[in-house]
Amino acid sequence: MTTTTQRAFQRCYFVYILSSLSGTLYVGLTDDLRHRVTLHKSGTFDGFTKKYKVDRLMYFETYTESKVAATREIQLKKWRREKKIALFATSNPKWEDLTPEIFQTIGIPRSRSGLQKKQQEQEL
Image (cartoon, rainbow, N blue to C red; front, side, top):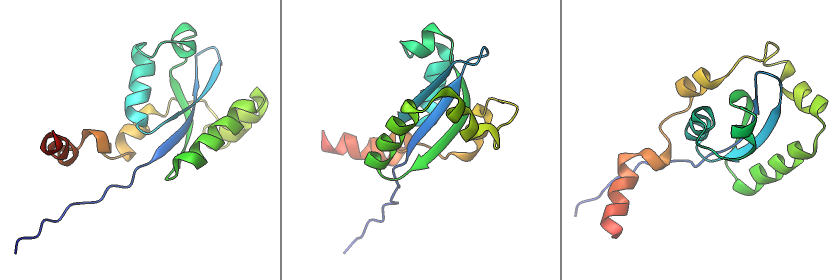
């Protein structure tokens, strides 16, 4: 009998705060932070962030439960600007773009893995 070992991937959800150079803030939710930030930076993510050039990652939180992440996103969106800034002021006091950090620390997203592509092809 042949057994196949598959590596299990833990799906992650990210609640994040972006800023423009002028200080406009945006709170979002995604399961692929690197891809989403890339969309914001390239201007291909239509809407508020494209209109106001909000593309600098200031802060993010990671969750394993989608409902918990969605609840947190809603919570942060209701916060006043000052409270959002206070959330990331200690970890990012200079308002530096954290995008380079996520490209170094977050592994290959599940949607980009060769294993998942192979599984999708087999299902078709």
